[in-house]
Image (cartoon, rainbow, N blue to C red):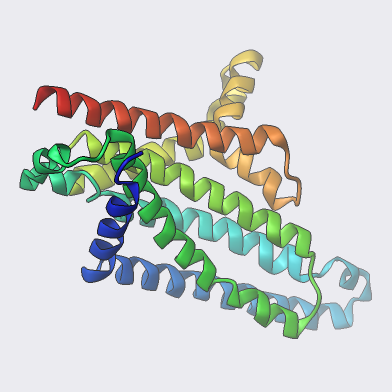
Length: 256
């Protein structure tokens, strides 16, 4: 994987020299912050109602009212924002013609793909790291299930890495950044909503569709359950699209 570090540094520099990373991170934090505030406001309202009805007070907690809805909302927001991180990774190189120059460097194809992928993942992790302040705020309010919180974040990070790998592949096959972003969003959305069809596709096919659904896999993490099958799914998903990206760049090198 010769040159991976050099490609990673180049892409990180590109992210933060241009307004892309700042804009995506700012949008994500503003939207996530709004959802967090809305969930806390709902918790406050429900708590006031529970003061007059003790029978429901035992069912009110930060985990169910704030954490799970917040993670679900953040996952939907990422469907829109992750394609903005990945759309230019290869598309810009192909459109400007620098992809041929890149392929002449003493860098192998796997190093190129992983360098760009890891740079996008790093920006994504910065986004996620900023939201950890929500946990600090919740600690000042009351207690919550730290296990559910950590597993939910793990699921969100694995999902984000999977969508980044998908976006890297789509960016590698088109020179138009808008097309890359739109196609990445559409493909990610299909993996998100595919389970909706499982109820009318038959028992066997429905089970297969549910196994392929991102949202079905993420749901386990939101419940605080981390299974080997769910982690393997995300790892395989990521590795599969990185492999396709590698093959795409290898084909480009062969054609050049």
